[in-house]
Every structure is written in C-alpha cells, then in structure tokens.
Image 1 (cartoon, protein in one colour):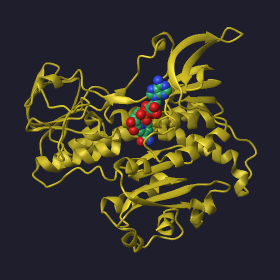
Image 2 (tube, protein in one colour):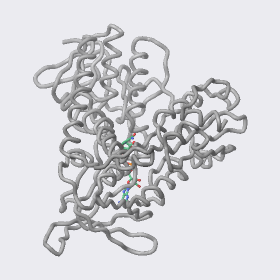
Image 3 (cartoon, protein in one colour):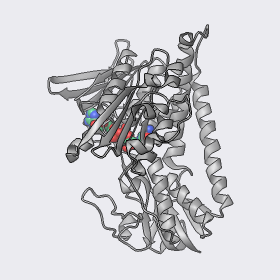
Image 4 (spheres, helix red, strand yellow):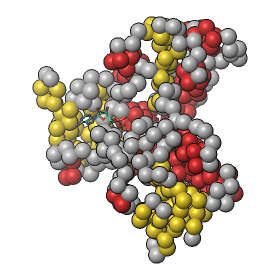
Length: 452
Ligand code: NAI
C-alpha cells in the first residue's frame, strides 16, 4: 500500500496532520497503537478540564451566597464526575475519528515501526510512503527517587480515575499537572501537600502571579513545601494500620517529610523516542537529545517531519497542532513556518493563570530592556461583576519601542482572553496599535485595553 503521507501517532499533532493532509487531497495513513486523540483527549487536557469544571461548579455552588443565591445543600458524586469525564472523552474521540474518516484518512490501529524513511511496518503489513510524520508525543517521567518503586503511586492517569477520595494526597512536583490536580482534590476536600524543588510553583509562568496563586491556595488549605527536593519515598502506616506513604525531602534548612494516604508523581514528561524504529532513521539530534527540526518541522532526512511533544520544544497540544499544520503545508508546497513567539501557557486552576510571550525572567536573562504595566483585574467591570471578593492581576511587558513582548493574567477566564495578547505579540503590535482595536464591553478582555 502506498500513501503520500504516513503519520505515526494519533494525538493532536498526528490527527491534525492527517486531517489537513486529507483535506488537501493527499492520501494519508495514520497509525495509532492506543486511542485516537492521544494523551490530550484521553488522559490529559480534556479529561482534566472536565474534572476541574465539576470542581469549579461545586466551589461555585458552595459560595453561591456571595452572589445572593441560596443553595441549601451542596454535595458531589465522584463516580458520576468520572463517568461524565469518560462520556466527554468518548464524544470527542468519536468526533476526531469521524473528521478523519470524512477526509479519507486510513486509520490503522496498531504499533507502527519505521523501517526507513519510505516504509512503515504495522503487524504483517508494510506501508510505503512519500512523506513520514513522526508524532509520537511524550510520556510520564518517573525519576529514580530511592524507594519510588516500593510504594504505590499515582500518575496523572490514575488520579483521573480514582473513584475514592483519599483523606490526604502528597504531590511531588508543583508544575502544571501537580497544580491542576492539587486544585481539583483541594476543592473536593482532600488535604493536599505539594512538594516542589524550585523556589516557586509553576516554573515558566510569571513568578509574581504564580506566588499569588500559591498564596490563594494556601489560604484554602493546600500546604506547599518549596525549595524542597524529594530524596526518597517509603511506605508507612497509621496508628490503626492503614498504609500511608512518606515523602522525604531536603531543603536548605534541613530535612523534612510529608505523610499522606496517596502520592501523585508529577515531575514532568519526556518525548517518546523509543519503540517505533526511530533509530533506523539516524536523524540529527540536539544537544539535549531532541530531534532537530527546522521551521518547517523537517528533520535532517528529506521527507521526514517531527511534530508535537516529540520535538521537546513545548509539551503543549496547541503547539503540536500548529506544528502539524506547518508540516502539511510544507508538503503541499504552501509557504509556512513555525513560530514559537506567542505560545500561550495556561494552568486551569481556579482562578486560572495564563501567560504568553516573554516573562520578566526570560527578558532579564536576555538582558532586554522592558517595562511592566500591571493592573488589578478589578479594572475590568465584567471581572468585578462576576468575581465577588476575588483578586486578580494583569501584567503586560512592553519593549523599549512599546512592542508587546509578554502578557500574564491571573483571574478567570485567563485561558480565554490570553489569545488576544498572543495575537498582539505574534503580529508584533505596539501598545498604541493594539489599543486601537475595539473590545466589546463589558468583557474581562478589556483589562488589556485598560492596561494599554
Ligand atoms: P512540569 O515540568 O510542569 O513540573 C514538574 C515539576 O516537578 C517542576 O516544577 C520540577 O521542579 C518538580 N520536580 C522535579 N523533580 C522533583 C523532586 N525530586 N522533588 C520535588 N520537585 C521536583 O511537569 P508536569 O507538571 O508533570 O507536566 C508535564 C507536561 O505536561 C508539562 O510540560 C506541561 O506543559 C504539560 N501539561 C500541560 C497542561 C496545560 O497546558 N494546562 C496540563 C497538564 C500538563
């Protein structure tokens, strides 16, 4: 069987590429060994956001009296929350499948192995291809912390499906996954402790806003151990013999430990580079071991492209989608190039935190000149109307010539409004140019206009 495009991996990079190839009239085959939709749809972005929405709704109902609405009794049903999550996932996976089918993409369920740049094997079958797209994504990284293999721990996958709530949860890693689950379990009444080796949670986001978010969650009962490197974990037990887990960490002040009923490991993910014959291509790699790609997502081998988490640039679904579009445009001869100037990052805590472009840290590292414009979210009328007793901040970073370099927001719905700033940054608008855009009133997005 011969195809113009063969794609390995059916996550956001792979299915976007397959759909775009099909739409462009190319014959395309997509290999997926597990579930179409990849980590994002099946065990990442979508299921976590579904759970978090239930938690947010529960929080909203508990605090409805702030808005003069009386809700006499509020409760939740965890097994129904999880069942709804599964329903949402099923619906979206089916949606992806039907889009691919509508565009004549051949979907092959099974583990594919690259033989060479023009041949892929799956089962007994050999598929010939003119172009090969590697979209194998990333996997949970479990560091070799002493004792980690002797205790039962959760990865994000287990945390998504636990139908029983533990009384207490220790989370190693205060990054994106750690904080989203900390938020979810805290809302449902679990005693959560986050152990993070850096001096602030959410590395890569704006430090000041991350600290504000941490302070807010500390008020709601989450304990944070910062600058605390986990050095070992071990089994323990309660007075009544219930099995517990002890997390031992070291800080500059000395050693400490957290004892909890469950442990969530969220210390990062890494590109999947093994198990699909990548070695047969002998591609050029970066110093960090990632596959080298150019702005068109082309690897060192003509006709072979790499997109998504596999490239190790940004482990985000939306980056993967854009990279896949660029790869297919390149294949069909349409001029396009990947830009990482304005990749939004969002953490779906409540409140959400989002950022795009440069951070103060990244500008300082570059020695760049910039100025900060910072406003409380209360400058947006809509924010005040809908966020009783809640504070938030919007921060814009402007270059010497007033070009918008970065934007950071703490407050709902940061995830929805951050694209406005992303557009300004990608289009290299100055503050003056962006300000001329008419914003609908009243919207939370007007906070940018106020700041400008
Ligand atoms: P992460 O890289 O965001 O955070 C891992 C954290 O663990 C870091 O802060 C690190 O300092 C800490 N850590 C590592 N070793 C440690 C140790 N021994 N002791 C204490 N702390 C330690 O990784 P995470 O949260 O696992 O997420 C993985 C990827 O998934 C991220 O790259 C993220 O972009 C993506 N993701 C994105 C989401 C979103 O866009 N909302 C949601 C969930 C995941």
